[in-house]
Image 1 (cartoon, one colour):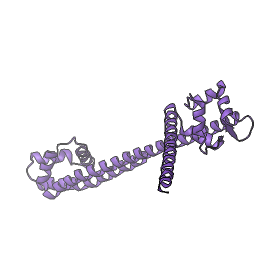
Image 2 (cartoon, rainbow, N blue to C red):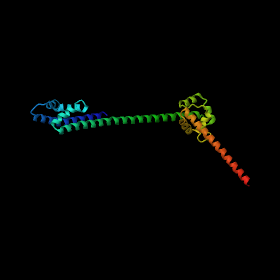
Image 3 (cartoon, rainbow, N blue to C red):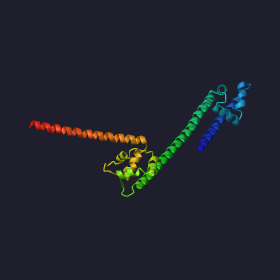
Image 4 (cartoon, rainbow, N blue to C red):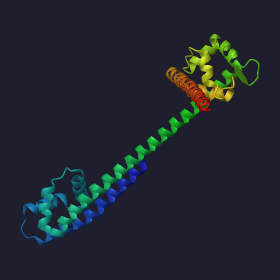
Amino acid sequence: CLSALFWTGALVLVLLFLFSIVLVSAAANYIEGVAVTSEHVEYLRDHFSSLPMGMLTLFLSFIGEAEFKEVILVLLEVDLVYCLFYLFFVVFVTLAVMNIIAGIFITEAMDMALQDREIRQRGSLQRARKNLKELSSLFYEMDEGKTGHLEKFDFVRQLRRPEIQSMFQFFNLDILDPEAFFTLLDVNHDGLVNIEEFVVGCLRMHGANAIDMEIAITDTKNVVHAIDGRFQLLVDRLQHLGRSLAS
């Protein structure tokens, strides 16, 4: 950012120098060719008598401190070409420099936003790894028999331990119904929860509201499944009754 600003300043300085050479030379030729001293001649002597004064006048024009109308009227007396030359300088330098400076700050802001996003992503990844490690440790602590899985009875029994409850609360898992929570973790419905089901399930149900929602979804699925089974049984019986009557 600082290097870009430095080169922008250097560019402005070069432009001031080049444009001042042209305007100071034109002012000197005009003053030499005028026999009678006028207000315009005095203005040219005050503002374009030397290269430093010409650069200062152009710089003040660039930052808006000089009287544009007065400079334009004086340069019109010299020649229309120099008046247009001066206007071109003001417009070109203003637009060019402003665009460069705006581009610098926009680029800097985008870089900072990208760095901030990368920092957040690294932080999220580190938290995910930490949670995975902590949940794996919790599973192994609950698996006292080192079988690689948890049964419902053992799971409910382990949840009576205060230290186990504290670990679940650390992950915002407020388990009010251990058996229902075990059912949510048991994705394969084989009565056993392995470490993958345990870790993925706990991460999925992070927070009390998530647990309640998962329980509600599971209960709804069970009810729908039961209703579907009974409906199918009723259909089979009706079909059997129809065949009996037909025969």
